[in-house]
Image (cartoon, each protein chain N blue to C red):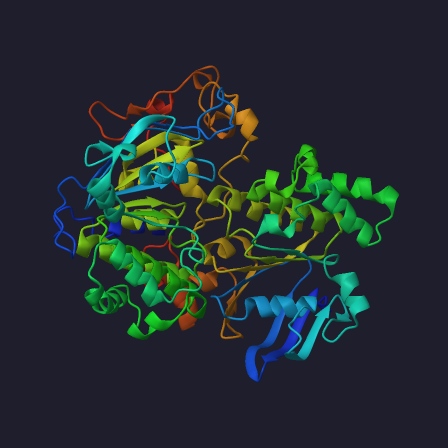
Length: 352
Length: 263
């Protein structure tokens, strides 16, 4: 049985191309990569006995690579993105840029990091200074990227064109343009800095469906033409299928499944991944409620075993009450799943 | 057989602001216990239409036509009448669930005060709230929480519980599930279907999420530039005739193919 989302997953003709030419500024990609290892984030004031906000063994992101983090609110996906940006400091583990821990970056290396890694935040409206014209915001990005003032006007014009905005928009202020144009302007400003990696947090939420598609097309084009690396935090599985080669599924701070996006969405192995996929309403597929409501956070945190068990249709005692390990679905596979029942359940029907 | 008059019936509704015609709807109705989807992009006129039903249009708007709710003409109705309908017989559930609640009130107090405001006698209030909680499957413990202590889905359930406690006949749901996680969205959507069964509540579901509306609504109206351009059952979405509908279907971010390519 196939569904429209299957087609979105299978039919995407252009995949991220690792061999794309380097960025417009002629930067080499030597050393431009982010690696998180043994990441553990606890927010101050939270119960130290409770589960951490995020536990992530390993995440690598280099130009040309694309990774998605998916999960519900509270799953830790935005926390992961912030840790990679260095704005949330992990309680344990490290994030390294070009082999140096973020907190040890100084001088030129710190500047290189801030140029190479640009965030695109969820709050499109809050991302631009309301008193600053769009052109001047882009110029600011260009200066932050070390560009010369005499090139500023040309850079603004080129970037507006690249993101599909008319040159006249440079003189407008954020409130004078539509939501979709604002998001394009935010992307133009990020590009002005000369990034190699974009960290995107729900880049299309709050936009009209048709506008969402255009923004995704833009991001896809930038990924391919500039060879950018993407980390996409989203609950929009359509966007994930379109943009990312690899997907990490988080549930209450823990990785429950991870692997190539196509295989993961078409043949989920973790019941939560399957439930996420089934939750997406699709035209022509009968409406369904695939999950029991989320238990109270306190209740879920008292779980010693699988955190998803209280909502899982496949949960059995006592196996699911024990701590679950993240294991390859078969020997040597990159695809890993944290579910003791995964081997017997096999590939789950994403539409059932 | 005489057909029962619809619960809400809008005819020849024209809304103009500063000389610009922003809404021009010849006919739109919601039957008792019916779920009707109203789908369109930003600026299509969805919110103006909702505001006109509630009598909450901006002061410089001029309105023509009629908005009949359960036999009452709401257009140009006196404030006293509108107040007795608005929020009580017609409930509103908005996208920003937590913002709809009062930040300084526990959610139980918030519901209670609204019941007082709508003259529900004290002895009845407790029973109505208890019934509403059951209907929306909300843990009574949540009534002691303040909005910031509720998740988006919980806050949405509180807002819907109020509608049930007030015995609203119609819920205007304005992008009520857009800001929620997909899994929570499915729960809230299911709730609308249940309330239709258990309470006979009608819902006008305003959304840009075509696929969600397709799974939920008895009928779907597509609105563009202030007018209904296409109308029908969920089949409208599998065989769209109007270009706007087609664009909306193709643009649906979870869908990978144009409807023409469907088998």
